[in-house]
Image 1 (cartoon, rainbow, N blue to C red):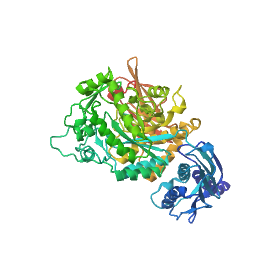
Image 2: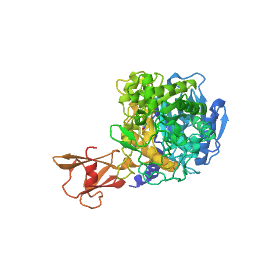
Image 3: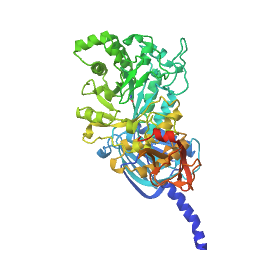
Image 4: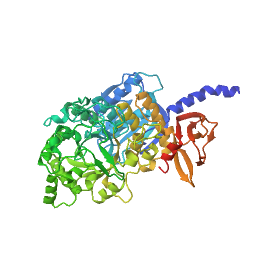
Amino acid sequence: MKKLLFLLPFLAFFAVNAQNNTINLIPQPVEMQQLNGTFSLQNGQTVGFSTAEARGVAEMLVQKLNAPTGFGFKTQQGKSKAIQLSLNEVANEKIGKEGYILSATPNGVVITANQVAGLFYGAQTLLQLLPKEIESKTATKTNWTIPAVQITDYPRFGWRGIMLDVSRHFFSKDDVKKYIDQLARYKYNVFHWHLTDDNGWRIEIKSLPKLTQVGAWRVERAGHFGDRPDPKEGEPATYGGFYTHEDIKEIVKYAQDRNISIVPEIDVPGHSLAVLAAYPELSCKKEKAYVNPGTPFSEWYGNGTFKMLVENTLNPSDEKVYEFLDKVFTEVAILFPNQYIHVGGDECYKGYWAQDAGCQALMKKLNIRHVEDLQGYFMGRVDEILKKKGKKLLGWDEILEGGISQSATVMCWRGIKGSIEAAHLGHNVVMTPTIFAYLDYNQGDPTIDPPIYAYLRTKKSYSFEPVPEGVDAKYILGGQGNLWTEQIPTLRYAEYMTYPRAWALSEVYWSPKAVKNWDNFSGRMEKHFERADLAQVNYSQAVYDAIVKTSIKDGKMIVEMDTEISGMAIFYTIDDTMPDNFSAKYSKPVELPDGNITLRVQTYRNGKPIGHLITLKRADLEKRVGR
Ligand code: ACM
């Protein structure tokens, strides 16, 4: 016994060290080999950079290191013994434009890359190799070491994006920057900025000042978005905001410094109520319109079919509409260096076109029989405008329906089918199917998280394979996650809805298919929860909650339960008592007795409750039958 006690301090030391040496990178790199020993950060060390181009990454890294360590790292052009960032003089073909090689030994860390983007990603990996306290806002004492390791890493896809809708709710310039910064940490390289919609126009267009004087503002409303009352006559429009040209230049530069390119979206011809509030003459009926504060202005009939109760479309038969769009795209093209402009094209209701004499005359002239095909004409005109500005058209998959030029890139959201069709037609495709990539969907039980019309678990996002079977991978540029913000009024909640699903998707779009493994990812994800806590970034913990599904068999309610993460136990009651780990333990589908039963479910891990208590009355259970 004495001998064993004597060993204890060593074991404790070993345990701390082992803990510090676990590597939990997201996204998982292509190749990684952990070596013996550690490298320690120390006060007075420098970050060296090979050429002036790499200075920016070195400076950003020094800033990230200095605040939490309290050390005084400095950058140094040329060679440093501690941390070195070097651009290859002869390109390493294997790692491409965004890849890097990170070599950490007890003597120092060397990151090499062909381009600055690769150095930036190598630096992000280095930060993730450091203890979680590297995310602290203030100087913190810890063992500032990283394990010795050899990493070769590069992305699977060139397009790794997240879309943020700033129309349904306005996010300030600083919010947008903070959001972009977090995306860059997980090696995303596209920020798709949904700048216009029925609920607000968010980009200054100097030649069309009413777009932001009028279109950026709506009446203040509380309560569930989509159930809100209409504006009253004369009520001032006080909720909103927009980005000036100066704001946009600043954000574009901020993103560029983090290897993120911004794709602006101007959503036309539908979703244009904010335009019509400013310029009602661009619609068919030319009636006075207002920026929508979240009223029930459409009816949905399932299967994607719907009716707009108010006109929110531009009139495709009016030349003034194309003059308007030319002005808008002139300014957008100058502000955003990205070769793509996203022109929307989704959910365009054609009911007002069908009743309009001008549209009917145009259809006759074009020999078009179906009003739906007017969208193809409209998009063709938009494509011509963009080509004149030297830009490429990108649109939601509805742009395929009316026919679109071969050069258009299709963003597939309504499922996998559209992407197969688009690729077979020779279009480049960005994958963002709702069932894997819609970050506005509920991630946990709909009785716990605020209700949304659909749900998507992190595990499902992680299972996404972006290259559909039978499609030549060369057409799949990559993919994104989309955050629509009807129900997201704050940055904090935008983060909650984004993570951990965007971490899962970062691995889908960056890592080789062969290294993907949910159990392994979920362990790393939990470590990133701890990092996010220190970084004061919000995330959902729905992965700890039970998944409760119901079905009816022989007239009886059958309940099936599961967990997203392995290693958890599910306990439940049906007798109106609070469940604990002495209650019934779930092991197989349960047949509920008839009667006014309430099911209460609690997950446990290592003998401790984890996640939320889920309480489902019979009516709740019935509602989810077969879902
Ligand atoms: C979309 O979700 N309306 C593209």
